[in-house]
Image (cartoon, rainbow over all chains, first blue to last red; front, side):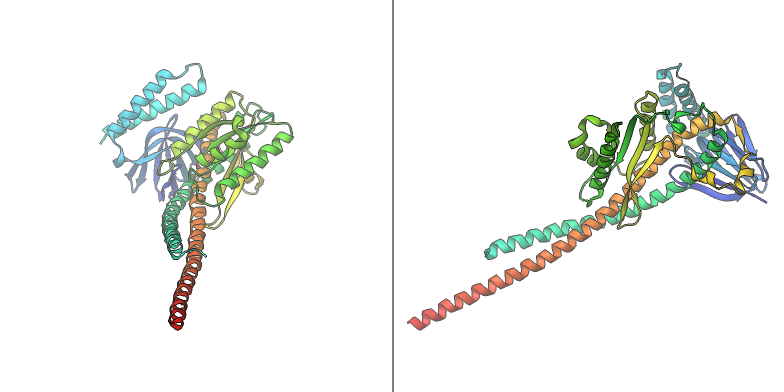
Length: 135
Length: 296
């Protein structure tokens, strides 16, 4: 029995199909979701969600942070942004990295929420650059 | 009775007005389709977000340290009203409906002795509300010149509202916007954003309650909730903006359709008038000629 995977961004439903396994980039390390996984709600960092079908990766999507809800039957990824791997551009990633670094310099380090948000943006931008460089 | 020339000029001017209104109707129709597609595309995320939020809200229920976005400040002294309108006019009562709803709300709240602040999204709402409530407007955002509204725009607004909440700028936040019901009708809706109203899904405990207890959270409920709530606020604003954008085009289409029809009626009337006048003139000239000939 496959996992019903859904990847949605605020602007559209990107993907909705059953897969054998999906690896999502959770905040505290990647999580591989197979059918029958324990129900979980996790936060995501920037990175690739890899879809496994027939023993190999068939699709890779870049997820720029968000949430995932996992139940034994399905896995719903609420991505802040999601792009197919082929659409990533290094220039865009670097532009965002520069902006995030600037924001990090400007942020009030005593304000925990703002600091975390800036840090998360920085992580997403770095992951985007890395992802764009990787083949 | 107006002269023939004056009538001809009027007919021509009404005809060119009709051309403009019918062109605007076409444009609104095609923009409406695009806006509807966008609004529909945004719906799955909002639905799933709501489902996740109700899971989370259930598991932190009763926790006193719950985030402000969820439970508010515990007071009801200052209200923030977010009015969503269009940036352009010529769409019937679309904008003034929101304006009127806001005005009634403000008057009601002030009678109860509460302080009111207004945040305007869209140029027309600002222009309308500035007349009566200029001192209560705390900010406005307009999307004039933007081809389509992106999620980033909504997020920016959500950030502004959240920082106002954290500075103690208001206690309760209400969103007033036009919900797109059909092309013909848009319903002015008030939705409370902060504190978040209790999710209705919690009222369905049959199979859900057993499932809910089993969720694991990583990192933990509070952290997830702290990240989820601002997103949820942005999503609600985003979907209100999209609904309003679709409604605006629908309202404009209807308004322009009836304007085109009215112009057509007017052209018919004027043409009739023109023909009568022309005939009367001919008859008059004939009588003059005949009576002139008889006199000779």
